[in-house]
Length: 254
Image (cartoon, rainbow, N blue to C red):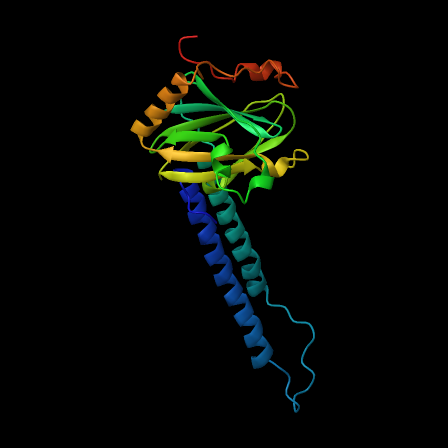
């Protein structure tokens, strides 16, 4: 898996590694007992036919209780990690309305009231230099709480940044949300993880996690380019359901 770049991704990575270690330990124990039983209790030529049916109630109870306790512990930790993934703070530092469309992405920076309008990149030019620069780029400040508000302009998509170690579906007519706390600076890949049509594979974007000063300069550069305001949802193929409209954040001062 890619190195985690958020606090929740780090927890997911730790849980993932712990599950592999646990599975390996259980596997070694079970395989060892099986092999030991095969060799230690194999029938010798001089032995009579051993009993074909035998019961050991305490051992059978142990075989039942131990797996149940293990599954319960794994389930409890899974719920705990999932709850961490979907924790929502009241006042995140950055709110980004991610609008998915066939086959690109729009990013509305709600608090700053600026936007990035994405255009589709052609994978046919993948081998040529400069492809990454043609993709829409989401810039985020490091060590900040970021809320993603996911909406679709047409069909079902899925917002996936592999370094977040999670993804979330983007559904027409609905608003999905989650938050992360960024921990590492760098440039990372993002993509759609739901088959959404002929050019699904070209629905790519960049994620740049930068210092606060670089983030502020990026926002000012968007304003200088005339990208003030928000890209609306008037041209979406499906109107947001009535109970979902209130979940869309409004820029400050509106």
